[in-house]
Amino acid sequence: MTVRVLALAIALASFDAQAQATSCSKAEAINGETAASSARTWDALYDAFHRFGHCDDGAIGAGFSDSVVRLLATRWQDLHEFEQLSVPDRRFRAFVLRHIDATANERDLRRIVAHSSACPSHARPVCRDIEKAGREALREMGKN
Image (tube, rainbow, N blue to C red):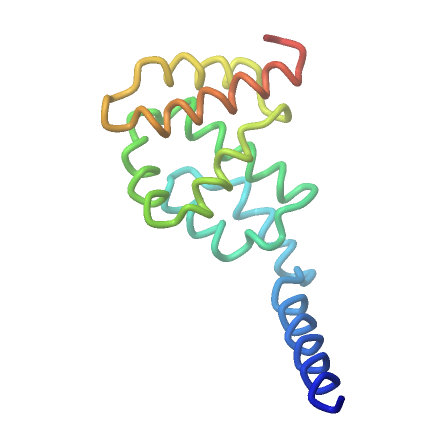
């Protein structure tokens, strides 16, 4: 019986430590909002994701969405940089795809969908995912 209690105590302590490690402090929220909305390169977005991804909610989430959509809409020629970061880090790829959403500018979403259809052959899998996310965001906006 004491082994079960000890195992339960260890599991609860581990869960509590994980929860504390992923909570977003006030300072992180302030810095995260700035970093999320001001990322102008894939490296800057990747850095913000690793530093503040656990704060991905509310204004910070909106800032991440704005940066993701802006990068895809206006810097499509840099898609290879996103690929280089997202191939070894599937969490980053999922994060980017999740942030192609209905909070974005409609014109930028349409650009992303158009860019995705003219994709380099080596990048077709990621382009399909980007196009799907863009079309879904437009559908959510009622702009399909």
